[in-house]
Length: 543
Image (cartoon, rainbow, N blue to C red):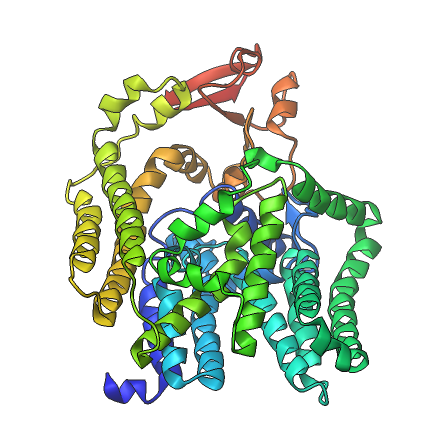
């Protein structure tokens, strides 16, 4: 190990690969987001149109294509969507994020080593690896890890330009990174980057004004470069599909900021709790440092501004989803590493308040980790207390629990208690608990998540997969889903389930899938014959 640590980039590459990669294919992709992005990548391959993003072989204006391009490369490399390699599809769809997770470890190690010390670099990578949600998302097929990395690099590069405005090299790199961020998720990348610079400039206005012209020119150069990358792609899309797709795209972005979209209208404090619980345990000691008004290091000042800009902005917008505040992970893990670095240097001490919060949050999570498999094992008994007939049906799915899965949460609880029980908590105790978090998440991803997926979506996915290659229509009715597109491997556009249901006849066998709580006008439509009811889902065939 000591020899490997002498080659830190190789060390973190191996550690990241061992932690992020092994169980990428343990469960099916989850509706909506994971399946949405993978399906867009698949449709690029089927249609041969790699320029535009499609869903159901129709223009899809919600997301730009960069992440889907990475998934296409992964699908092609791993040879998915063939009968012999079907089981590797989930692995290939998630592999880009595992690669991005490893790249993030290397980036934070590099920056931490450059600006503080090599120890700081290691602690930053370790903090990022040990926080729960960054770990989970690095094993997913979600866009945000790539998006976050580009924004972080864009902010970091402009901070380097601010430190040395003589050279425009850092400003150019900032523009490229933000441009790629815009090609990943849209103009919100430019918004977050620009707001961070603006807030930093307001806070340090006296200093900024002394070199305002030079700094302004660098920021404008970076912004124009970023916009040009984004506009170049969208100009091609508008040329292909017309101005309507651009209007729809910006209307969607505005709707996310101003309305509670897709049932995600949460209270203002939502993201505060998401970060506290989701980035456990590093949030316990990193959080207080974010409130400090006097950040001695320049990088700390930028990281603090970035954190609060993201958190406040996404606390104000109406739509609140877990990964909206995910950009906070990088500055939060930075302050975790900084605290741990100061602790080892003897300039920071562990306080009783940290112990109380560590015990409280840790035991809550340990309880949840234990309850999920325990309830799963006794799902049938608990279903009678649930009024939603769809959830009742889900819990009837034949998911086998061996019983020992409860021990994952119990193990974590023991580690938390063993840590807080110490008379004097030392760094080694915290490092041990961070390692335990990594082990628990690996076990959960490998063992528990596939079983949870067995309740939520395995039944319809099995139905879709059983019809792959057949000349039939399969569509959902009464609920939004992308799963039938990907797992049925749909080859061309077809009407929606509601449209097919109303037709007196169809040109091929037609199957429609509903939830058991679907409206009566769907369930008892005269054109449909019920084939079966299974685990909360209804399967119909058109007459």
